[in-house]
Amino acid sequence: MYIQRKLFDTLLPALDDKEILVITGMRRVGKTTLLHRLFEQISSTNKLILDLENPLNQLLFNETDFDQILINLQASGLNLHEKMYLFLDEIQTVPEIVKPIKYLFDHYDIKFILTGSSSFYLKNLFPESLAGRKYLFELHPLSFEEFLGFKEVKASFFSSWKEKDQQKTLYIANKHQRFYQEYLQYGAFPQIALAKDAEKKKMSLIDIFNAYFDKEVAQLADFKYLNKFRDLLFLLMKRVGSRIDITKLSQECGISRDTVYAYLTFLEKTYFVEFLSPFTLNVDREVSGARKPYISDHGILQIMKPVPMGTLLENAMMTQLRVRGHKVQYYQKRNGREIDFILDQQVALEVKETGTTSDYAQLQKTCETLGVDEYYIVTLNFVDLPGFIPASMI
Image (cartoon, rainbow, N blue to C red; front, side):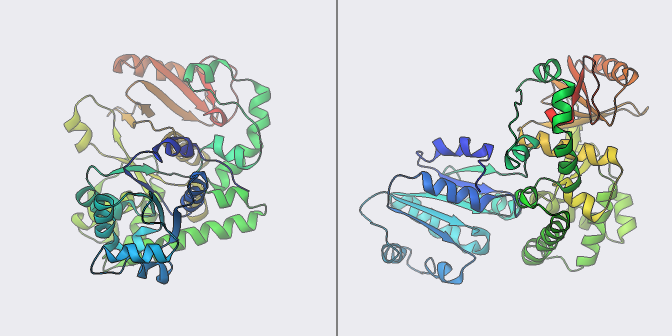
């Protein structure tokens, strides 16, 4: 069963552009499925899709003279005298492929559509080699709206926050509550959403976590002590939604501050952890401020390091917001007043299991001092008051 991802609608018109399309993201988020779906949309028969984890397909590009690759493409069924569409999956397995792709793009009429699972690799290599030649797209775990699609549940989601607030009803909240509890517990990977059995979901989550270590950390990172890297990752899981102190992390893991920074960069660039910077209109303060970590998928967080419901809900909300493409920041004052998420410097969200009127009053007061005019309490349990939005409607 194929469930269309929201990114598909963005990618489809880009198939007509000259630029190379690069789809990146964490493993198992559905990049290969999306690639095959795009392949089906090409009306031309002069197209080819290759899985570069297959050593035989890697050989196609293993030519010193890049013009010779055209002979291999012709042997694979492509007509060299017409526009060619070349879909390449898992390009991070062949790092040297970027050079022949650049050459072929510059000299022949080939439309490239690529996927790769490591942002760390793609973002560091591609800007230099393919500058001005590519569009980069990121595919994330499922939003709750997409999750309901995988469950074949019809639901209406409103684009504006005011509409979400005004259109909420107890009926809709209760209708979606069972599904949202599953979304919270097991996360947002497509294969997990489709699995029927709870035990299979748990086993698959552990497999995804192990695959990250085996295929991303072990293969891409040059880390001498993988156990220290693992220790840092588990410390971050315990600190989800809390500001991190590099010095303390260094001391607890027994590694240098520079090593901590290197590990954090790798975790971020391979999509396993996302860090939020503090809300400020001063760019220098934003860059230098203490950041808060969130795990890319709350199902992995829950299966590897169970956390309180409030923390799990906050991490899940980060997953939902990221898919919507917002610039997300947090606010926390020294006296303890804080706001979980500020979107595009315009909308503030505070996440609660069950929000209260005092929570809303505090949020309102803080937002007034910041000059943020739109603010809401996001709740797990339904609250029938203005300014409260169910998490299942985000």
